[in-house]
Length: 427
Image 1 (cartoon, helix red, strand yellow):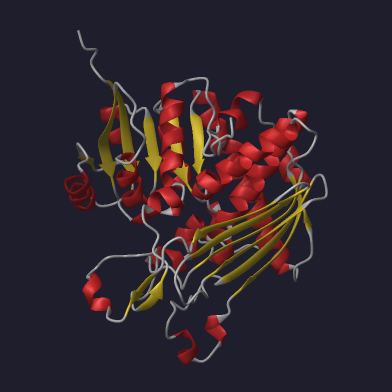
Image 2: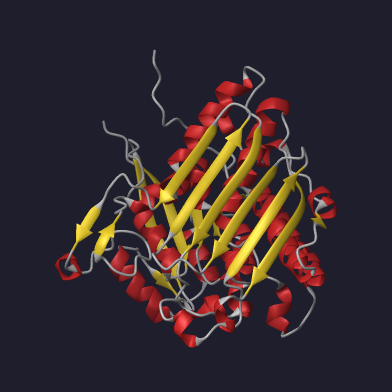
């Protein structure tokens, strides 16, 4: 007699770009015998948007509110993929509803003073933002839920391969990550909320530099856990956040979305507890579409990860019309001329690995996400200290208070041994 399939119910809060790739990604997850993933509910600020999203993505039902959806569906996985300002509220609601796994898109929260219409210096915004995030994480911990902080760059295959290498090197007392560089850039988000601080929380430093920052933080966590049983944390930050295009003649911004209210260039230098460094860029000045790259130097290797573009595929089109509405690479402004297509882009960007981790956590109550509450906490601390540093002309800002104020027990930490394998072996 055939056993009925095990059903994992999934909900999505939001109907924009992040919600769209979330819904698509669940259909791409590796096959597991006896498992049925059900997109059981979606909600939006406007019910008609949720209904339209449900119809186009095969979601079982649309709901007017997040709380109503959680009560009706009782999901095993709740995806918070809505506007940034609602992230904290929706995580709290999911925790109170007893959802086992909560997948939270970046950023974890934004400064709560925006909703009150207040003004404050960057040091105050940092302190109050960390207070807000602590309350959110406390509710998740109290409920016994697990938070997966959805930093997709952590889950790209190149990162998995590098973690495999670090696991091997740790057995020979090697594998120290010395220097890291990363970039995330394109020509400017067209989402209206992006240029609205009260909705987005910030610009390129907050919403783009966060992407390469995530894997840099993760690799130092992994290094410490493999060698000493404790993650290596960030210690101090220097950063700049600038509005480059806004101050130039209008002609300079012809091929970009010129931000009026948020930074379009961010640079962060992180010094870790062991004195090693990471430097990440996030900006809206890439005229040729998305740029996602990482370069990692260890005591025994250098690993360069070109997420997008990658030259594995090359295309030349003298007439872009023949491509119709095909998108060869994220944010590519034109298909004309030479381009480097990225097939299976959701795999390349880590979305599939990210949601696969969420499902694995839903199936195993003892499993912690690879990118979890520690990642959310340290990312937020670095980003908010980055704006404080920028306000002080790039002076280093010490992170000791933020890093030391919250402990993360072993059950909340990633286990790099469970990150999977993507490399073959010689025997």
